[in-house]
Picture (tube, rainbow, N blue to C red):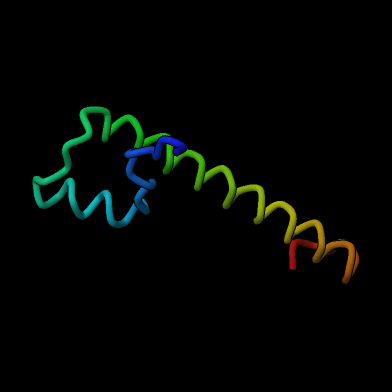
Length: 67
């Protein structure tokens, strides 16, 4: 019979943040993990914004005069 992992599945950032704010978060490295998650999300958001801007330029041509 194969052994079963007892590790908990990862929680979402909002759920983990709520647990932390309520004082029930038990993971000792929560703040470090939260900061890494937020940095990853910020980076992904910036990448998406750059890709969207490039697609707009490609679809409409460069904007002249900043408008």
